[in-house]
Image 1 (cartoon, rainbow, N blue to C red):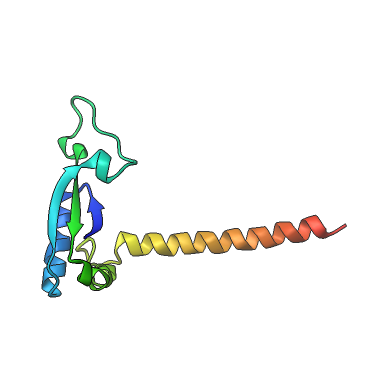
Image 2: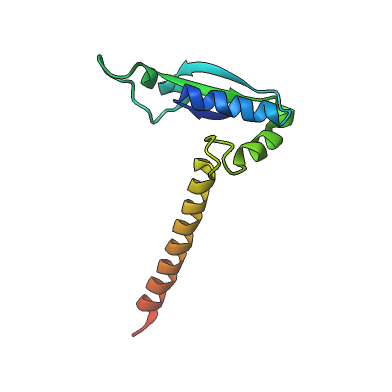
Length: 114
């Protein structure tokens, strides 16, 4: 079962090592970047070759939750010891959503005052 996709082959290999270190069977399949990452665009002639490929991290369906939790640990996704980009993105999106709620409340109050 697919759990993550990246264009970085080395990062995909680190994900596999991290999951296998946690006792989770994991493999990487190479595929077409445009199919696996629909927002990506293929490089035109002379562009980087790796832009054409994506690396899909796959785990058994029964291990999906454990694998997700293992990759969510700080440093597991990028191998740096820092929080993974997915975790940071979730935090940034939560902060953005909270800001939107505050702005919405403020606008609603402004519109109801005479």
